[in-house]
Amino acid sequence: LIIKKRPYVKTAAITVAVKTGTIHENRKNNGIAHFVEHMLFRGTRKYSQKELMETIQSLGGTFDAITQKTYTKYNINIMHGFVDVGLEVLYSMLFESIFDSDCIENEKGVILEEIRQRMSDPEILRRVLFEREMYKGTPLEMCILGTERSVNSLTRNKIYRFYRKYYVPNNMVISVVGNIDYRKTEKAVEGLFGELKRKELPNFPKVKVKIIGRHEVEVSENGLKQVHLVIGGLAPTISENERYSMEIITAVLGRNMNSRLQTRFVDELGIAYNVGAEYNDKEGYYFCYVATSPENTVLARSTLVEVIKNLRTKGITKSELESTKNYLKGINAYYYELNITLSDQYAVTELFTEAEEVDRYEKRIDSVTLKEVNNVIEKFINSENCTM
Image 1: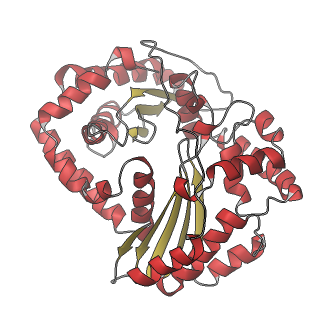
Image 2: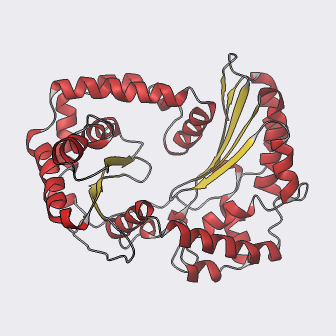
Image 3: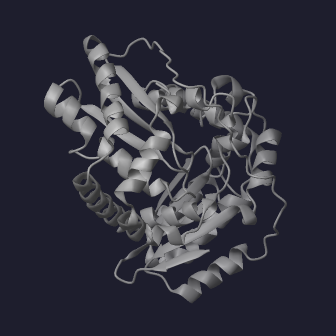
């Protein structure tokens, strides 16, 4: 349990993070972790689906949940005087959901539509295809939502067994941030969750990716008016100190308006609007992307490679390092002013390392040296670790 008091706000955020996701699936049950997330909103022994929503919304609250490849999280934002109600609702969802057979069949239709909608979005599709190629042969190659075939094959028994296996107290972190009382919050959590029994968990899978050298794949998708190019590779994970250098590297490449990719593609060539870089420290990869017109494909591809090669051969400058540090600290401070963002970060970070890392962020970023950044570039930004 992680509690952060902010007496100057009128709200509070509650996050429960569970260390399970696509990484615990196989091809036959792909999408099952995401299906469990959906079912926790479909009714418990105490609340119907409608009552779950009405209880939180009538107290000025909102719900949210998301399944990722290595974790799943549930959020409630609520007026600060009703944290005990929010905790009680989350407890009922997490440990008293009924998994009604008729609801499961109905939810299959909902999830199949979600798959069709998301897989028609090129910004989502490019990430899915990139991950599929980079993580080939491991559970992380699979789509979080599953496939139409795998979702249709899921039964109540399979879903419930998965839920009972991973939704246990020693596989969860609870985080509460906002205008709250420490002792009352701790007592409320203890009263609800304190009697739950620990269960033996299987070891969290260690994904070993076979680096196959420079790797390029083309996928044709009808109906799109642009070409989407992605290039990237493995990167440090959240538990490694090198992650702070990687944050700086991807920011220099494409996470702000003055980044190298933005400057080259938008300001100088004028061939893209959607361009940038991303870094996923939970699964350990980075990528750069650009969306452009078909006639600019060859130029965009060569320019993308050129920008990355330039980073590889020349590294970054001292002025880039200092300005990027300030940018990251500013963005971080802005997001962490929101209760829900901070609550999220505490809970998820604690799953993989320790929540205190969230509060150390500025200090960690400030301590990164130019030599450390360029060492990480040499280690990760290379043709042996490259999927396009």
